[in-house]
Structures are given as structure tokens and as C-alpha cells.
Image: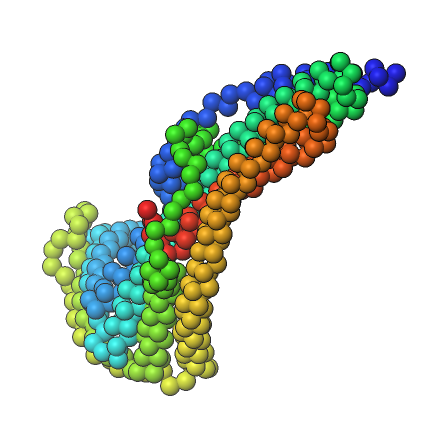
Length: 441
């Protein structure tokens, strides 16, 4: 009975490749280049769309701040129709006169002096727009880094799939060799069962790699907002990227990166806002206005108010206003503006320190991964030689299957470490580009 169960287990593992191929199937994903993926994601991402809309709003905010130097103009026009009658001394008297009455007017007002409030408000709008521009750059490169990471995740999954297929092929060779040895009685049946288990493990790893590939394709499809599934193009290289920029140049780029520039612009906007608030609260405003109204136009039928006016009114106003006490609202507004400037200064200081610290971490991460790739390449070559030697020794009966299994497991582990190191190096470079706000070729 035990022998029957062992044979059935081996047959099930040998039948798994057909099931594996059936589960893999074709996903019909459209190949897409990395540049196209980045472009589509930057065009459709909610983050970049919001950043671009902030630029549109900021441009009108600038125009509004500049328009405060111009006078406010308004016009009015009205037409009314009167009919019926009124009671007077107990008698209903009909309405006499033309039923249509008209009125019109226009006015203008302008601030002559505000202590510089409009000037500081305009400067604040300009600084805020610069912060919006840097935020748009930051979001574009942030989205690009996310897309690149997902694109590289697909490459990683493809490499894991290839490594899994290679491991499955090697495990199948070992299973065939052990089965042949068991058949002639050179080794015990345990070797064949261990080999079958190794084949099953390799098949499971291959299934996981293909599932990871499908998941990565789905994630990339979402990022680029495609109506059909997308994947990487087959011609994309899996080589490790290079970083042909010295540390000093990268440090200068980071110190002038979009996050730092955004913090600088935000601080300038906060300072200008504080000045605008102080001038509006503590400096009197001088205003001038002009108003003209005309009424008494009448007509038997509607004629858009033609005819002479019965009365007109022209008014010129010159005023000076200053708030003496407003329940400490002035002090509250001033303190809030001062605190906002202090907070912006702290954010800028932290952004500059972060530029140094985070850049150093990203550079170390990239270089460690690059060195790991070189080391793993050598270790894989050594592991392949060791596995080949163990296969020959096992075929001659000079070593046990445990020795062969150890060599095969070591080779599989080295391949996975190499694949992960490549992925880390690629994503680290993408993170550096996002941090400094420029592409590194």
C-alpha cells in the first residue's frame, strides 16, 4: 500500500507540467515601452492631474492679485411695469401714467493706498505659483518612479519565471536520473521521491512567478490607465543601470531638487502673506469711488429705457478707513500669518537636511545592489559548475542525492538573489531621479 501511494505521488508530480501550462495561458497583454508607460501615467495619474490643475488655478490667482490695482466697475439696469390701481379716500383710483419705468447706473471704486497690501499679495501669488510648479515637477517624477518600479517588477517577475523554468528543467533531469538508478537498483527509492518533491517545488515556484507576473501587469495597466492589459516589451534589457554622476554633482542636484525648491517658494509665499496680513490690519486704507444713477424713464410700451431721465444722481466719495478694535481678530490673523511663516521655514530646513540624508541612502542602496549583482554573477557561475560536477558524480554513484540537491538549491537561491539585486538597483536609480527631479542617462 505504501509503495502504491509513493508511485501515485510521483505520477502526480510528473503530470503537473501539463497543468502548469494550462494555467499559464496567454493574457493578451499589449507590450509597452517604459517611456510610453511613464508618459501615459503622467498624463492620467490623479496626482499629476491635480498638480496641473493647481497651476491653472494659480495662474488666475496671479491675475486676480494683479487686478487689485485696477478699479472695480459695475453697471446696473432695471425695467418695471406698473398697472392696476390704489385705494385713496375709499375710492379705487386707476394707475395713471406710462406703465413702463426704467432706471440705470454705473459705479467705480478703487483703493488709492493700502500700505503695500496689494503688492505683498501679488508677490505671495507669484511665490505660490512657483511652489505649484515645483509640486508639478515633484508629482511628475514621483509618478514616473512609481511606474518604473512597477515596470521593473514585471521584469523581475519575468526573470523569476525564467529562473523557475530553468530550476524545473534541472529538477526534471535529476528526477529522470534518480528514477533510472532506482530501476536498476543502484539507489534506494527515497532518492526518486526526493527528486519528485524537488520537481513539485520547482513547479510551484514557477506558478508563483507567473502569478506575480500577471499581478504586476495588472498593476501597470492601472497606472497607465489603459483599457487593455499592458506589459513590458520583450526587447527591454535586464542589465543593471549605471549611475554616471559623481556624488558631489548628485548632492548639488538634490540641494536644488524640486522638494527643496518647493519649500523655498512656500516660505517666500508665507512671508509675503504675513506682510500682506500685517499691512491690511494695521495700516489705514484710502479709497475713492464714483457712482451715477438715473431714473424716471417712462414709456407706454417697452423700449429698453429710451427717453430723458426725470432725475439723475452723481456721487464722488473719498474715504479713509481704519479699524481701531475688532475683538482681537487683528491680533489672531497676524499671529496665524507669523506661525505659517515659521512653519514654512522649519519645513525648508528639514527639506535641505532630508536632501542630504535621503540621497546618501539611495546612493548606498544603488551601489550595494550593483555590487551584489556582480557578486551574484560570479556565485551563479560557481554554483553552475558545482551542480554540473555533482550531476556527473551522482551519475557515477560517487555522491549522494543529498549532495546533488544541495548544489541545485544553492544555484536556485543565487539566481533569486541576483534577480532581487537587479530589481533593487533599478528602483534605486528611479528613486534618485525622482528625488533630484531630472533624468539620469
